[in-house]
Length: 329
Image (cartoon, rainbow, N blue to C red):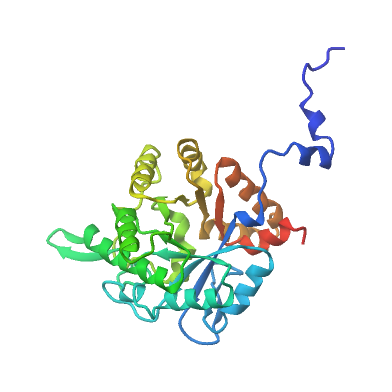
């Protein structure tokens, strides 16, 4: 009888052996939990398209924070839903804007929790775009350089409020350099920038846009977010942000772009962040609610795949559940 020369199954025969030779692991300290804060009082409203994810007002926010900290998560990403929107998104850089007030509250309650502030204008503008819009004879146009000045103001306001990390998600050209200069001039030279370096114009953002009420009122974001068909362009985008002083590089969305994560991991030594975005979350939740999948198994496999592709950190709406599961709860 002929035998195989190599028996790979020897190392798969027991749980202990499989654990011993496991190449990739996901830990609670790899996870970043997004939070949606909104104006009002006594608000804890579930987002329809994102079961288990809520809008929180400042007076109810402590409930969410206590749960996040209680499961061992060390970092949160803050998104604000304002009650006032205008053409230039002024509440994004108002010292009393919802994000700035939320940051101050979080740092007062949990000083050791890492607070990451999403820095964009789309949820604060009445047109829903990530920059200043001008109307020309050719139609509406996003003014790149004018937008940079406002984004830098927003970043400084967030840093003043106590944000530990600034995470600009706007995809304007030169945004890392503009924000770095703004932070440095305001005395925040040690505040790192987690750049949404490679952000695609994706269909996977639908539930998020419901959550922050940021659907564009006209057109789309294809003139500043990346074409999903392009990979080499991702390297150009990332290189620009590295040259401008980014401290982290992010790829968004996650599942359909694991090849991009690997490309960045192979090229750069900076921490790589992946965003497990809203529709990726909602598809899993919808299938789990129907009993079609094992939610725990699918989520942990997905997060492991993201780490295996090269991500150091994972922003995910599954963060609290994943943290519990990783602890065996």
